[in-house]
Image (cartoon, rainbow, N blue to C red; front, top):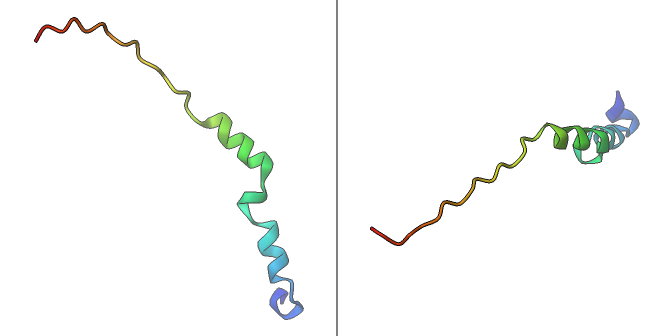
Length: 46
């Protein structure tokens, strides 16, 4: 029915994940934090 009324592009625009700013922010909070390991001192002996 939406196709017949020419509204399918409107639904596509509403459902576009790139337009979901709140969802993007929630996704960023769920990402793991980066852990940096301490570099060990190399003494050059093999």
